[in-house]
Length: 287
Image (cartoon, rainbow, N blue to C red; front, top):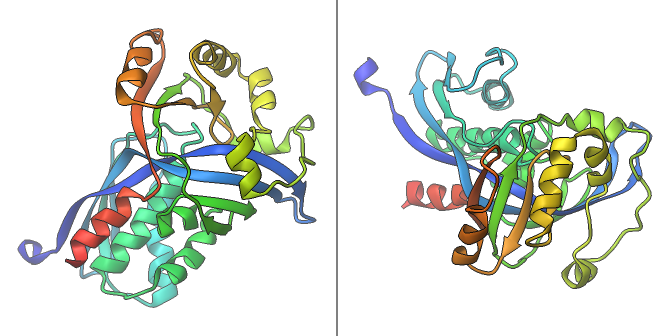
């Protein structure tokens, strides 16, 4: 039986950048109201899938400290089984490259890729809209990764509209710290009343990140990286951090700056993508 199992390898789960992040209010249930722009970068986790006929869900990964019961990838696959009544299973291997706790959306992207890939491999035939609704129950950022287009987002991040920001070359720096999203959004000093802006406002002025002053104060490693990168370009924090980034006009320019980066920091060069590598992979599967 093992020889007949369907395997499909190297499904990308790309990182994202928040090109700005405004906190415009708070709902009675405690969730924050946001405005942001999501753009993908060509830096991804990679997931391999092997379909199992016995319904079991197994995981292989190159990260430690997360039990299989708590792993979002396995939780996503179980949720998809429950929602659809599918009796197939899968062995899922996760090759993690995106830093955890960096604000790059790695967990949400892994969940979205799991939904998209298993929908294909299990033959479920669900639409992207249905997958996004399922994904929203797993995390507010999951739908944007399912849809796979750069997006203007509002609400808690679930109200999405396509947008076409410039596809820059980015230097992303990953300070050696893990920033808790829950901690930052619970901070008393977080600004929660930034006036709402329009897409045109963003394209003109660029916005800012309301979480950055909080993270700067609480995480000196992030503040140091922002100050260094800010000497070379407009340095910004993505999401609630800890990763920061700056955009450049050319690959040559960003590589030159990256070579000046202090050796104690981890970082990488990536190209902005308004269309996710996941969509490109799905198209290859369907052709």
